[in-house]
Image 1 (tube, helix red, strand yellow):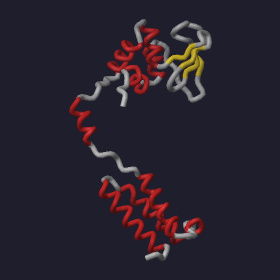
Image 2: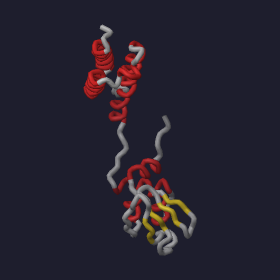
Image 3: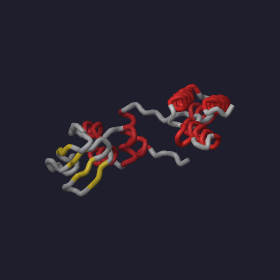
Image 4: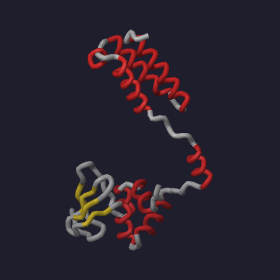
Length: 175
């Protein structure tokens, strides 16, 4: 896995609105954008501000939060990224934290477990396509799927799938 640059991290953690404020041009971003004076070219209404970027129609230029700050603060992107991250108190993870995260077992793929149960039901019940909509069958399946929230470990995965297959087999009259 490639290490993220400070530029990428800063663009993820700093909103364009925040960058505009630091550039001395507070703006309120909306999903469809709002037009404001561009801090780069000072053209009134030339910059359309979105939550994660801006577009200057006068310069025909896209700005990320960091590229805007680099322009206004007159520094390169990496230096601007570091300065912006310092402003929000960002500290890169230390080796002990990274090691701990690497040692943590992966989160169970709950969607895959749900799919496995449905595939099991389709395999053992020839008319699953219609039976799955029966009140008793759909309620039992929903209860099984609801129990997925408690699945945390590999052992939980095995246990949940085994018990759920048995339960669904019973409601489908297979056991």
